[in-house]
Amino acid sequence: MSKLEEKSSAPKFRDEMAFRGFSLVVLLLLVIFCIVPFVLMLSVSLSSETSLGQYGYRFWPTEVSFAAYEYLWAKRLTIGRCYLLTIITTVVGTVGNLVLTSLFAYPLSRKDFKQRNIFAFIVFFTVMFNGGLTSTYIIWTRFFHIKNTIWALILPGGLMSAMNVLMVRNYYSANIPYSIIEAAGLDGASDMRVFTTIVIPLSKPVLATIGLFAAIGYWNNWTNGLYYITDTSLYTIQVYLKRLMDNIAYLKSSNNVVESAALALRSMPTESARMAIAIVAIIPILLVYPFIQKQLVKGMVVGGVKG
Image 1 (spheres, rainbow, N blue to C red):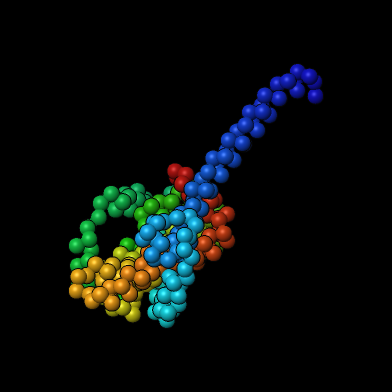
Image 2 (cartoon, rainbow, N blue to C red):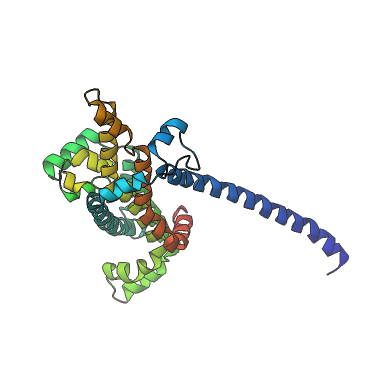
C-alpha cells in the first residue's frame, strides 16, 4: 500500500472507530434503561411494606423482607391454577393467531388473487375504526355466549391482528418468489400443499415474530378477564394480580375495619406483593425470548418492508 493510500485510509479508520464507540455508548445506555426497571421491581419485591411506606422505592432494599414471596407461597395453589390457565390460554391463543394470520395473509400476497386489494383495505380499515367496547361486549356475550368460559380469554381481540396480517403479507411478497409458487402449481400442487410445504417453512422468522407478539399479548392480557370473567376459577395470573391488589387496597381504605384488623392489613405486602407477582409472571417470557431472538429480529426487519 502506498503512502498516499495510507493517508487516505487513516481518517476513514478513525471515523469508523469513533462511530463504533458512539454506537457502543448509546447501546449501553439503552441496556441500562431497560435493566433499571427490573432491578427496581426486584428491589421493591424484597423490601418490607413499612420501609416502602417510609422511604419509597429504592434500587437497594432499605429493609430486606421475603414477606411478599412468603405470601405468594401461602397462596401457591391458587397462583398455580392461575398460572396453568394463563399458560393454556397463551398456547392455544398463540397457535390460533399464527394459523389465522398466516392463512389470511397468504392470499393477500398472491398476485393472481384479484380481490386482494379489497381484503387488504378491509384489514387496514379495522386499524382505524372499531365497534367500541359496548357493542363488542354485547356481541360476545349474547350471541357467542363466552362469558365465564375459557374462550372469553382467547377470542376477544387476540386471535388476529391487522398489523400482523400486513407484516406477514409483506414478508411473503418480499421473500417468497412467485415463480416458485407458480412452478409448484404447474407440477400439480394444490394451494394448500404449496402453503404448507413451501410458504410455511420459508416463513419461520416472521411467524416467530408475530408468535412472540401474540404470546406476550395473551400473557399480559387482563382486560378480557375483567370484562367477561366473574368465576374466580377462571382467573389468569394477570387478572388475579389485579383483583388481589384491588381487594387489599379496598380493605386498607375501608373505615369499617376494626383496629386490630387494620394494623394487620397495613403490614400486608401490597406493593412488594405486586412486584413479586410481576416478577413471577414475567419469567416465562424472559426464558423464551433468547431462543427466538435471531428469528424475531429477522422477521421484524424483513416483514416491515413495504410489499
